[in-house]
Image (cartoon, rainbow, N blue to C red; front, side):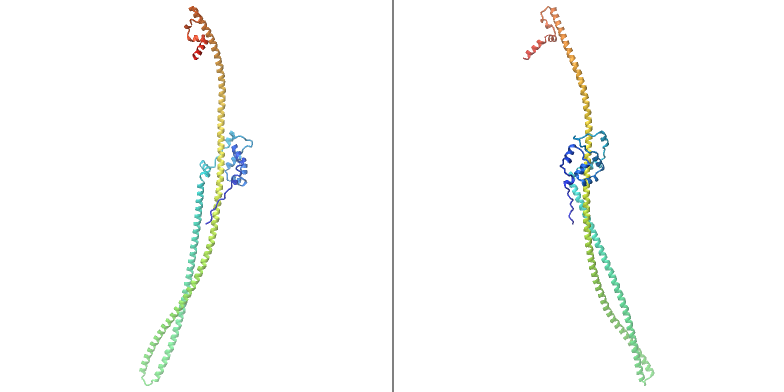
Length: 428
């Protein structure tokens, strides 16, 4: 089993170059601005930045090109104008849940991602092994079937050959049997002729006998001779047939044994050749399958690495896009809040101005009232004094003797200093 492919670890300089640089981190964070494409290219490098721009949403690229920070800007945030707020309206590439999932991917989903990758690798490995085993078994069955077919063909070939040999031997035996029968018939015919000749000679020598007796004896001798000849022919035929059958069986047994021996030797040689060819083909197939499996694993790992990088770049792009949208939304809210509070402040300023005018008018009225009150008090005091004099004159009393006839309020108005002295005494 091949070793598990490890994804190459990226250095921090490959992902974000010079993270502690004030140009890339502190300045942008302090200004609360979106980095332009030139700053991203300078921080990430040309190759990684090109990959980032290739796999980034086109709205994000437009956003990076549009929201370029001004070099002279020193404020923490800048409030865009109403025209920019109306123009800078972007549609997010994905919905809120997917963006939220991408944002929390590296926080909550790292173990889940590793487990999913392991499951994918194990399923791919099992699938490759299962396919290789199926191909191996199919190839074995194919070679076994070819060997069986070849053995059947050889068996049929040699059976046909044995049948033809048996047929030819049968024909040869029949020819030999016919020749033997012909020779036997010829010999028997010659023997019969010789016997006839001998009988004829013996008959000629016997002159004193009767012709009838000689003919009867001759016929009896001929019949007996014919029977003996037939018996001898049958017996000879049986003996010759048995002898030929014995020889034919021995010959056929020898031929069949030699054919079976040749067939076994040829079959063993063919089987060894087939096994050797099969082993060689299987070794080649195994090497080829192993190479294909290794290439497939490398391809799968390469594709997984590319997909991982694409997902990382897409995640980065989505984060940047979400950050830009969040900043844009915050700027819009800040602008609305600033506008609202500016309006409230202007209204408060107007209210303060109006209240100041009211306070000035009221102060003026109060001053006038105090002056008028003072004048009225003085006039009232004068009238009270004259009324006191009138009472003193009517009752012909000494001054201040008829004060008890006056109300307390008039007494206090006429004698304010005395009241103050009495109050001081009471306090003391």
